[in-house]
Image (cartoon, rainbow, N blue to C red; front, side, top):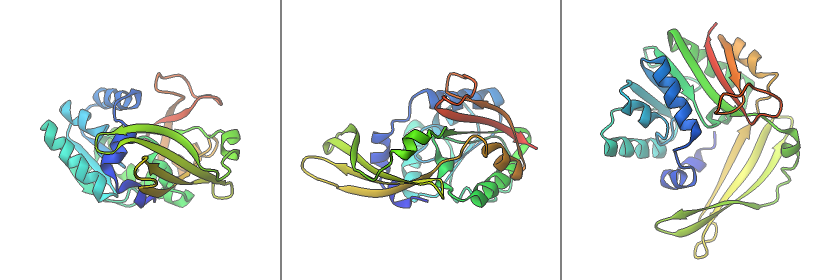
Length: 248
């Protein structure tokens, strides 16, 4: 887990705005499935709060107390009720099942060991109601891009902060091929405050061939794998592995 990266919840929301096709996809999927909803790695509630606003009973689980505090604040501002819980997606017991469980925005990739992924999937399996669905998205690894992770610090983006002005985001990454983990350090700076945040972020790659096996070991069945938010079928060159699963 990359805990330090998620201790700056307000900055996280500025850097990664919540609207977009991913949020729309999960909202539509939850409405289509109906019933109760559980999001693992819910962060500040980007995707879960709109789903709760549609009338679904919602629970959000995250390891970061800072992200959960911001999620509670945002839900309160919108007058939306969500059960927010601190917990580890690898091992939790909520004493109930859910009709729709999801893990969005590569959050699953914080689990680096195959055993942790399988344990997570088994825990999700125990929390799926009959006929329930588990949906998640992870990027489709591009070996050429992974090979270019040379440890050099490069500017990735900028974003406006109402308090600080323009924030520049630099990232330096290396790829550990044996572990299938990209090890990065993120630097946030302004002209007045160079490197006011420096945080590690390590993300696993799950390759397309291994993913169905990991799900099977976790007691889940892959129903459908899409390649992008528009519903294009998964292929070697699509950016995402957007997976719809059920209990095996």
